[in-house]
Image 1 (tube, rainbow, N blue to C red):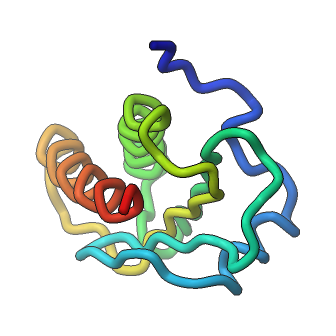
Image 2 (spheres, rainbow, N blue to C red):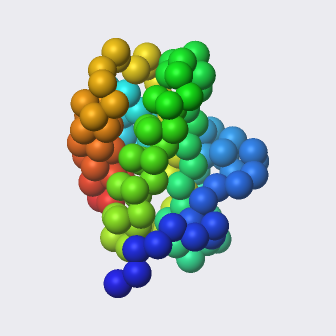
Length: 119
């Protein structure tokens, strides 16, 4: 089974993000909220959008690490997800951790949120 992350598996337009944010909230964790549009998308695969604001994760290294971890978790679970758009939004300030600890915390939370999205 292919587990790549092509351009067709990403949200590109601001209107796609806006539709997901106006839609329903699927899950909420300590750091992230996952939203999806109310209307099903016409895509033939699950798609991912990320919102990691600078005011909640000040360092670019931190923001990029968070994005990398979320993309990797999504890439591995994409074949098992429903064909809908998912937007992960960071909603609380990132704790002051080492990058290794941050990766571990983000990965466990994202895996749990993706499990909720599968249902």
